Structure formats: structure tokens, C-alpha cells
Length: 288
Image 1 (spheres, rainbow, N blue to C red):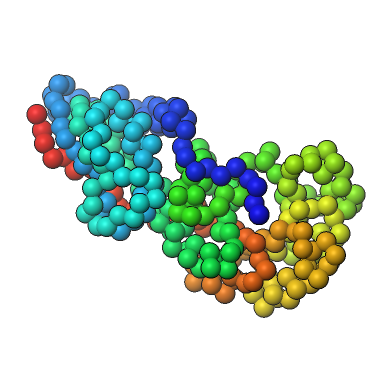
Image 2 (cartoon, one colour):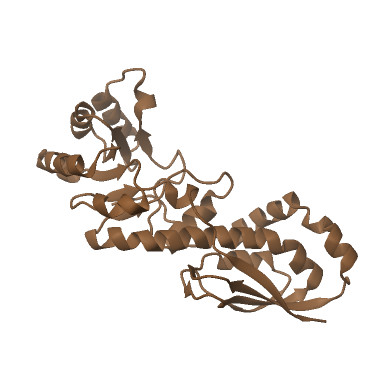
């Protein structure tokens, strides 16, 4: 199975540093409206509220985003919430809460959208013991957050960066290298590194099967063809040791058709790049 690092928690220091940069980008410390129209010493109680059903992701974002506030209750990552359910109760400086609200909400809404979508799709892959994989098609600067949300929803993190494993694609083959020889050399030098080869023709599949690659990515094949290719792979002397991944144009509507026995993983870039954020709001309860 996939051996990449699984982002099952967000490091508090990492979140703190990221949020500081996001607050600087938004000029939270120069919020003209809040500074002019609110009292500097005013305190409030505010609730973060789910405005629709969702799988929550982002507890650490709340903790670090409102670090100068008292957070009395806070839902856990992965909890299923109903419409109007309170995610967190926050008490603290009015100006700080207002100036940080948008950045925190943007992250919570996006991550909860990813977690909710992943949770919904995993119900198709899990019964077949197939891993639902994310990709590197993430928002620049938000990869750790978005891949964390995939894990929260029950998905599996594929490689997190280019140094974590090797994936040989069409563009790498322009120089017409000897795949069997090169993958053998790569495996000798990087023994604990996974090597995956993307194939979109039968000829490429034969080369991949005889190589030192640990994984084969069947790209843009129809379900009927995939079934035949899996039979061919598993019948090959080296086939049972290969991790079989499929990808390419797999949408939510089509996913069930691709949950084919013998597949190890289905990768979907849409888990992170084609997501509808969930509706979460911050509502002021008390003002002092």
C-alpha cells in the first residue's frame, strides 16, 4: 500500500507561522474599519457556526488563529456536524476577533469542504479495499492544510512533494531512456523510495511490469479495459508485487464504475482542486 507520509494532524507551530503570514497578507493589524468603529478594549463572545451539514476540519486553525482568546468549546477534526451546530465558542478582544475572522473562516470553509467531499467519496472505495488518493494538484501555500483535510475525510495522501517518491511520466521519457535499466539503478540508489510509472499504452505497461518500479499508474483507461489490464498485470511474474493505481477523468458520478477488484488506489485531483467550500460563519453573541 501507499507509504507516503500521512498528514493526520497539523503541527501547531506550522499553523501559527502560516497564519501569521496570512494575517500580514490581509493587513489584519491595520484593519481600518475595525480600528475606527470599535472600542479598543471591547470584548465579545462569538460562535463559529456550521451553516450546513459538514465534516469539520481545522481545529488547530481555530486554536492558533484566536490564540489570544478563550476558546471554551471546539469540535474535533472529523466530526460530522449538522446545520446550525456550534463549532467553537470564543471569548476575547473584539478587534482581534474581527480582524482575523476572514482568514480563519476561509481556511475552515475550504478544509471542511475537502474533508466532506472525501468522506462522501470514500464510501465507494472502502468496501473494495481501495485507497482514495489525493494528488499534488493543491493550492500553492496550502498543500499541508489540504492534504490534512483529505486524511480527515478518510482519504490517503499520495506523495506530498517531488522528493518523497519518483513518478515517471510521459515528459520524462522524451530522451528515450532505458526504463528497465534506469529504474534498477534508481532503486539501488534509493532503496526505500517508491518508483511509479505512468502508462497509457499496452507497450508501456509491458516495460513497467519488467522494470524495478513498485507502482503502475494506469492513466485514462476505461473501466472495461482496466479490468483486462489488471488480469494481465496479476498474471505476470512480477505483477502481484506492483501497486496498481488508476487516474484520469474520474468524477464523482463515474467513481463507482472504477472501483474494480484488484486496484490498490484511485487518485483524484478533484479532491483538492475542484471543491466547494462549506458555509461557516462567525456570529457575535455578547458585547462588553
